Length: 72
Image: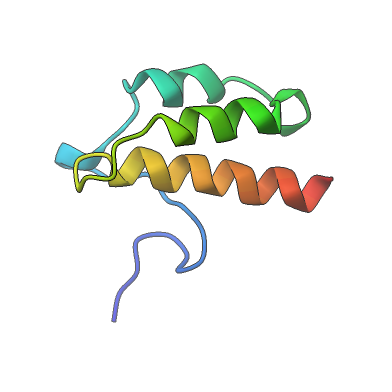
């Protein structure tokens, strides 16, 4: 089996699932982890739709939450 990225962590997809232009990705991609507010990420995640189209941004936000929890 071949993985794109690491099985437990988020990895940028390609094609239709590329999120580089998604507003939530743009919001966080230029910040250092120490500058990201965990409650903001959770609020943004709470506003996401539970659809296959939203899966990639949900995975990214969950990855941010895991990383923030590791540095807390």
